[in-house]
Length: 183
Image (cartoon, rainbow, N blue to C red; front, top):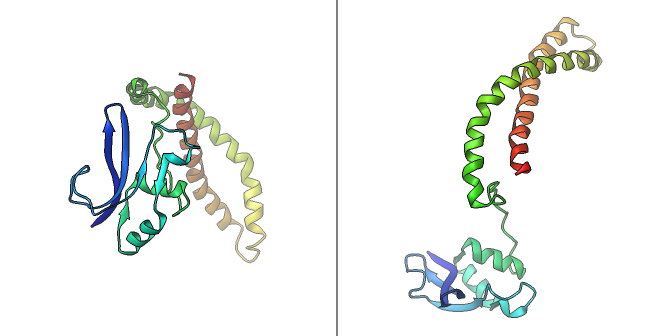
């Protein structure tokens, strides 16, 4: 399969990349079919010399079935040659590597201590939905005027535990995130 990817060049601590069309089986810096541009990550983002690409050749090779790598697709997205790829979901990215291990250990210990704390709060949460029940029942009775009043009450009771479970989970997640924010 043809790939549009980066081929590394330059010297130590000063990389420069060629944007090339190559077979996916070839090594990164090995044989390639055509050089279509260059990328210099050391230059500021606002300089034109940072990314140089022949847009016509990119479109030609993509029509032939060449697939850009994630990094190249981001570069093409910056130049508006193709749409920007969706950002990945990496919640650990903002945390320095040194602190990642600490936060992982705390999250393992946190469920043990939080489980004991959640039980009293769960009881307090049960009281709050009881206040909301009459409103929910009144709304359900209006559209179902023909149905018996007992049936909506039974449905409301079945829905309450699900709603409570959903309410408990986000609060538990929020507690886990709070210690990360403090550090």
